[in-house]
Amino acid sequence: NDGDDNNEESEDFEPLSKYARMDTLVTVLDTFNFASILGSIESEADREKFFGDTEEETDESDESIVQLLIDQIEFANVILLNKIDLLSSGSGGSSSDVESQIKSIRSLLQKLNPNATVIVPEQPKFEKFDVNNIINTGLFDMEKAQESAGWIAELEKPYHTPETEEYGIGSFVFRNNERPFHPGRLAKIFKNFGMSLLHEIKPDDKDKSDSSDNNDIFSRVVRCKGELWLSNADCCPIDVHSAGRQLEMTPAGNGKPWISKVVECHPKGDPESEDSNDEDCEAWAALDLTNEVLSELKASEQWSDRFGDRRSEVVFIGIKLDKKRIMTELENALLTDAEFNVAEKDRKKVWASDVVDTFFDGMPLWDLEDVLGEADQEACDITDAE
Image 1 (cartoon, rainbow, N blue to C red):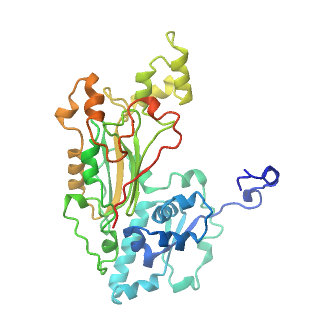
Image 2: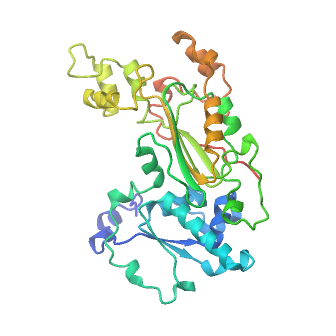
Image 3: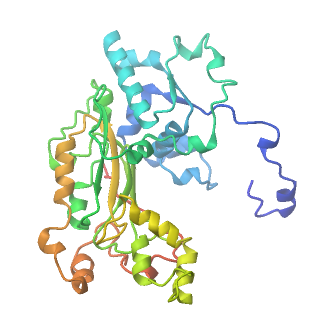
């Protein structure tokens, strides 16, 4: 209830938390259709079936179905696997195939949300299910829930060799703070996300996509999340996230430019400094930037002497990922030595003006004023059409 149209209703509104507490957040997963949702591009008919035939706009209706599914998995305390009994009909009735599929799904869920309890009911339709598994558990904690996603855990880990994979489920993080991506070359490989997931989770399915082509190196990625440094985006990071076949990239925009860009444009923003000026101080204050925050950032691994906090850092979670090949292709999509080693005065021309930006169709992303004050940057949905 936002109360925008009725102030009286807004004053009378009482939150549910006044009378009840959030005890356990439970996600019931349709295991029979799980692979299909991850491995398919939704149609308008799919959305109507999921959201209902309504013209009312909601925050959720802006999300894709697969994104909502991943969100519910990442936020849950308990995940119940439903429709297990239907899996046998899609695997020729082999109990070993069904068991392998359940283990694969379970391993994937635990990678997406390491803190969740995954429960496989013993009988169909939750018959004789012990409700004590989901009632009065006291598991829900809002702060912990907001940090429960597996991609957050991966990004917070120090540089490390990924652990041994179970059932082919793995993850890795690409990090680079030495040079940005060339948007044109990145666009050539950043496609076909999740295309092979249907076959990987349900091997009997007819969609046996071959991912041997370089254009398909991300076809087994279930989830990716992070920030990219594009050569033409000198003022802000590009937020990137995928869920199944859905991939979106969005300029970070208002309130989140590169800190180093702010310092370069407004070097005298520390109000405690003798040579500070009002304009620079206002710029720092608008972004809650202080000398203490800047000092902590410079002392971290996220800062480089040459480019500050500009960096690419993305986690990939998927099935049987060819990590070596993905890393190689990503590194090849960075600026070449010839492109990178230009005079600072020529960077805007070589890194931005001379490149073809297929992601944002030439949207200016070089100067601070290009993004500050633009509260709603338009996302670039580069999901591949079937």
